[in-house]
Length: 318
Image 1: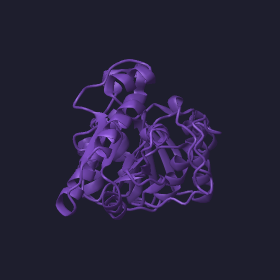
Image 2: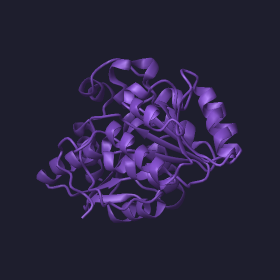
Image 3: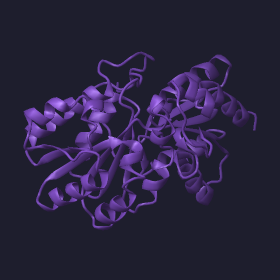
């Protein structure tokens, strides 16, 4: 059994798992390095700086310099991880990601925290919805959208040896408990969290638990919904997506990002070419960020259980 979804708070928040995982990585491999752009306080990883001074670097608020340092360390045999908030991890340093990392085939893992609406009170300037579309456009990149703290730690370890650009987008806290510690994750392999015959709900990140809640409501109304955690938006689990399209009436995608170029776009692009299927998308519809608590922002952008349920019912009526 790999799933234990209860809708409850997990044993550890994501920021705690990130800190613990870095310690494990440092102890197992002294070539692992962690570089931050003055946001160790947000992850509560300041202690790592003093405990592992040979492995931890703080560039200050110089994100482009952070990516350059990571590339230089890679060329000298190190395995770099970098962290900052999502907008600074992608749009502010996009040229460095495109040229210095992806084009140059350097192995760098970028952790972008406070993904999407989880930036909450940091507001519009710090609320990045376009990051998925940007990184998807870079050849050979990998995008992990974290839905559970266990998953975050697992992919930090799983991608340690992966070549090229790896982008791990995640909240710092407030994820629901979904996976057990012994869950086996793979790059490019989604997970079916609930089986169903009528409609498929494919979620990523914080929207996975929302899909599970929606499926429960649909079940009470006689609609059987399959729930899939896509795990990696790129590479996409095309085999499973095709299977879902062939065995249910249609698909609802749900993402904490702009639907332009995001998960929904990826699913539609793939299916339109080989198995045209009804796909309805839940996500941010071409909007900028704003200030607010998570519940307010979910309502503002339609990232709700009710929206998923409504779209699933539309598909079931086909």
